[in-house]
Length: 166
Image 1 (cartoon, rainbow, N blue to C red):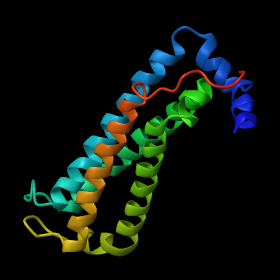
Image 2 (image 1 turned 120 degrees about the vertical axis):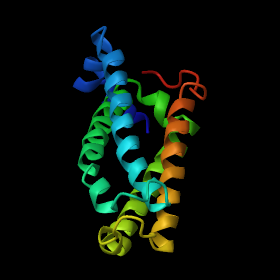
Image 3 (image 1 turned 90 degrees about the vertical axis):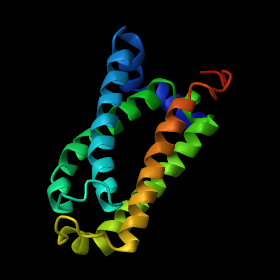
Image 4 (image 1 turned 30 degrees about the horizontal axis):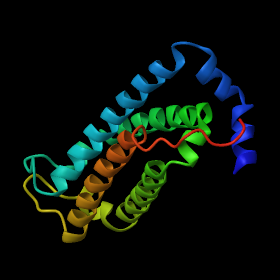
């Protein structure tokens, strides 16, 4: 782990994150904007599957998922910049470990949804109920989205003491 951390400290993203005064605060703003895009689009779609805003077809809401994917891209890029900028603060942080677990579970949930339920959900009309499995996946999606946000916020509270000789 120490070799990876040292490699990250020597990398250009680390220098970009730490050597310019405005890089980190701008990246945080972009990160949260991406989170808003992802949460707004995926959250609305999941809520529709759970029976809220039933007057809309799920397919109409699903068109917005592209915006959420753009937000996810923003989150990934800035998240990697944060990790590169202070690797020991993430790799030795239990909140980060939980965030990675929740992100992995989100990926599995999304894969299951698109491989098993999406065709049925896409064909639903206004006021149609989503299948039970799709509702469960939507609930899991919302739960994990909140968990990722919670663990991301907790990163600063569970920040480890300075470790290593970096």
